[in-house]
Amino acid sequence: MIENKNKSHFDLIVIGAGPGGYVAAIRGAQLGFKVAIIEKRKTYGGTCLNVGCIPSKALLDSSEHFHQAKTQFSVHGIEIKELKLNFKQMMKRKNEVVETTTKGIDYLIQKNKITPFYGTGSFADPHTIEVSLNGKTQRVTGTNILIATGSESSPLPNIPFDGKRIISSDEALELTTLPQSLGIIGGGIIGVELGSVYARLGCQVTLIEFLDSLIPTMDKQLGKTLHRSLQKLGITCHLNTKVTTARTVKNAVALTAESKDGKTIEIQTEYVLVAIGRRPYTQHLGLDNIGIVTDKYGKIEINDAFQTAVPNVYAIGDVVKGPMLAHKASEEGVVCVEKMAGQKPHLNYATIPSVVYTWPEVASAGYTEEQLKASEVSYKTGLFPFKASGRARAAEESEGFIKVLSDSKTDEILGIHMIGPRCSDMISEAVVAMEYRASAEDIGRITHAHPTFTEALKEAALAAWNNHPIHI
Image (cartoon, rainbow, N blue to C red):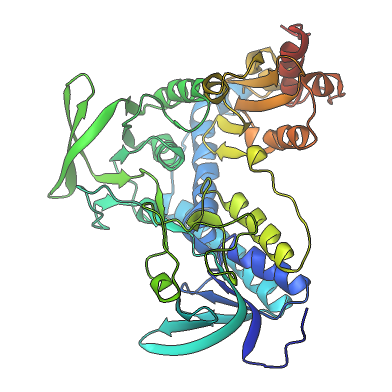
């Protein structure tokens, strides 16, 4: 690396301090780059830490504790005479978790001697970024520039956000009072997670999904099982249904939807959460000034080294191809910067896990059955239900299953899908197995501690390998 003697010029400028950007900046500093990071928020962490992953998981945990106390504690011999919900305290705790987490990132930025710039960054030329804040602009120059601006909630074309009654996940995480009713448009990860939060707390939730399954990007068997679980919470789900109109009426929203069989559905709720997905945040970057063109979805095309059409400009995370996941962005940030430094790191997109933090949790890595069938890959299936797990029965958590898919000839694991207790943690074993191209037999022969939830993965692997799990 060439020594940088210009104090106002940086080896690497990162635009965006979310999970992709701040991780890339830290790794760059570790590798000896002089790094600057540009962030439009007052705090680091992007959507994930401020209005996404972290606050939603804080509420998911709090609401699950409340729901458990209300519905399951008595089974364990724990009796509560007067259970009360303090919604303000729940939100206060969520905010404290967010504050502590973002302050932790601030510490890491300082520790690694990364220079921060606050404001909106846009390209003046391939090496110059204009940072605008409150009407003032300053210029920052860099040898390499990394775009890590993330994404924002997508509105429905005919139902724009008003931030008051028709809301995105940002506002849904900031409600000051518990709503009596909530309509959700979209049955993906965001919709089912926030729907489960409010349903556990006593809100009447109605979810409308255009496709024929919840969490439609994951294995369909997971979606069907989660559907039944959400129904037990009292959530009403309308699949194969399209929302046609939404209008505010006093302190509520009137929704009209139409199912694929022609049935009209009319719903009135206090709020409507539009959770149909997210779109890349690329429109204010001044990409036209440097000749970078986005696709119809707003994403930036890159090569295997994360370079855009302009070689010194790189892009990672939600603004490029692939799933919009925080951990995917973080890993891309590390790999991208290491490649800048001349290293040869590895990132296997086929093993990036996806997790839904409902309860039961849902987690998946590798190929789904639907993908294998479409590709005409010959595979074996092994499935083990948690109701056959001693640890799950002891914890009163016997809902769900683990499914292992392996190649019918080589026995190599192609995909692992699970719904049940603590799946967000257990999926990591699946990722390790697939990264090392383990066979179902390999996992089936590994000793797992007893009694644990992970024994279910061992049993599912045995079922895929020789169709002879021990405990069913």
